[in-house]
Image 1 (cartoon, rainbow, N blue to C red):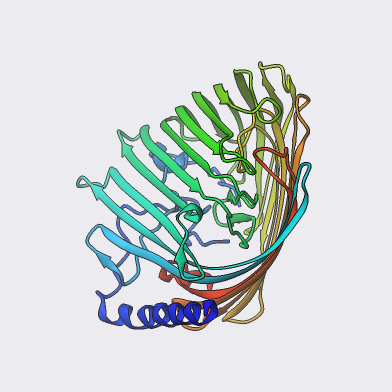
Image 2 (cartoon, one colour):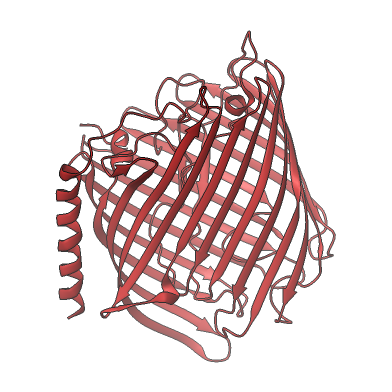
Length: 470
């Protein structure tokens, strides 16, 4: 019965995807206010690199020099003007997908042994965007993004498995040197989270990356962060920015939903970027946030408030047309006694070949991995994409993280996936994934165990047409 209902839902979605675009408005040209890498003549694609920081004879607006653009939700790329056929004025539907998940989950509960179960669910998801530019010179841009997903299992919609993410970006070009951007990112991960995609999203034309959290719940997590960035073009080759920010996180227990951990963050970041040559950039960034925690557990999660700090000296270089390298080294510390001072580091290399893409990323410092912690976390990501033909490609990715905290046992996780994509039309593709996750938790907010996942489904995404070569 479950498979019959899933097939019926898939058939309805496929029919809508195939029929609606032909009945909707024709595809709109890119918005004049859409953002693009000023050092690249190509539109950004979902594939990784680093801003070249090319020298300019005349001052370039800080919004483009420092990269103040609306980034696509859950993506490493800017939100371009490719709205697709489902557009009505400011409003557009950028993508829609149907995926069928088949999971085998084995979790280790402290004192109760291991519990193994087979799960299956259907996921419906979409991406909705409201985007508009104001002013005669398009100096102000407002972007609202919303990416909901709905899980259906045995004919029931599970509200505790709804994953939601949303974003608001308002970018103002105040004058040729000053720019300001107000951004907010919100995510909600429900119980029994399903994820089988690649662990790292990469834009090879810009050198930007976006980590995807693969940690298995089943506790719920809320994450929200708002920041205001002021960017100033100090000289044609030097940009300074300052971002005051405020954040809130909340999670429930993995075994006992009565356990609760919340965190409030207040602070900011200062960064300086300087172009040595057209292909080399050096920079410095400092991030400081005071974190206060409320925790019902005595054995897991942070308890003492403290100041979390990260400082990095970075170097970026573009080698040829497609190699991009960046390195960073510095210090990280907190004042709550759990981690003290340590080494902060980052390294990233990306290469886009004619028929394949390759990216490797490493970061050590304070970062959000899917659970709340005050300690440093090491994370490594590898992504390799091969375009076997104009329509068929595969992506292999792996990830590892480890959070070291002297006060509680360390948390760690390993993730691997293989993704297959077959383009049926310019906007419709068939996707299939296999993935494996193993994790070591704290027994309260993160469980220990492993998960095997297989997925099949359909994705409609006009904005991703450029990544398929026909």
